[in-house]
Length: 258
Image (tube, rainbow, N blue to C red; front, top):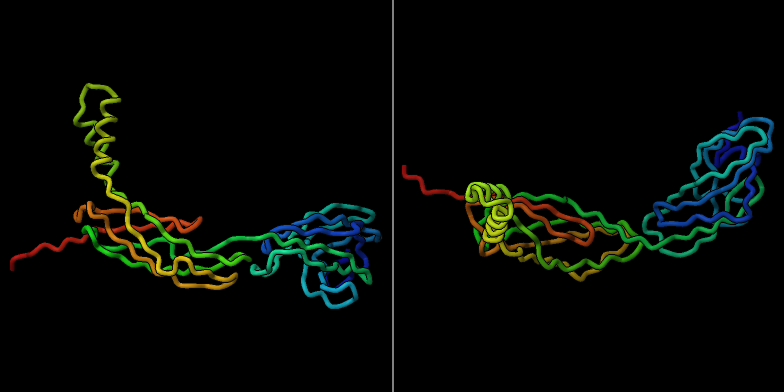
């Protein structure tokens, strides 16, 4: 068995394509290559090299493969390749090294909008109306396009016992009047206990973060005026295609006579 790598024995491997195309976002380029084994031994293909020039030279990138070809066998293999995540969209010309031959490889990098946001869950104390809570998030641009930080319009916040209380009230207050009457009571209870939208502001809204960069985000939100300081609340807000969860525990300190 002969092992093919980017550094050894590539001249023993045959590629039948005249041009190879790899297409996709930088972290997930895909394509197909038709290989052939013209040797009398089985080939174990582990990797082949990619260069930026048509002339012979050291491979700057490696295509990881991992397959075998029996003597005389031909096979089409799907290949995957990764470039740095900040690689700009566009078409790049590269070459595969197979012995002394350099086969053209057209690499088409698609636009990619991708972010990382952390942490994704926060806990606070204090549900009195008007209480202000602050959050600091880390935003990382994992795409290859500049990312404009969006404005946050509002967030939702629900009493943790909202549904339990509503259905409990509905089933207990309506005895034999049917399902619809029960659901009417449930609906009215939910409406009467649901708090307003949470006012939320993002200081860095409108700024642009470049590919590969990180930035801290400062967010503040205010507990709605019709919240109950004795109840616990949970909710979330959307930041582009990510969600951040929030839990707020009521924290009431009673005056205790000593």
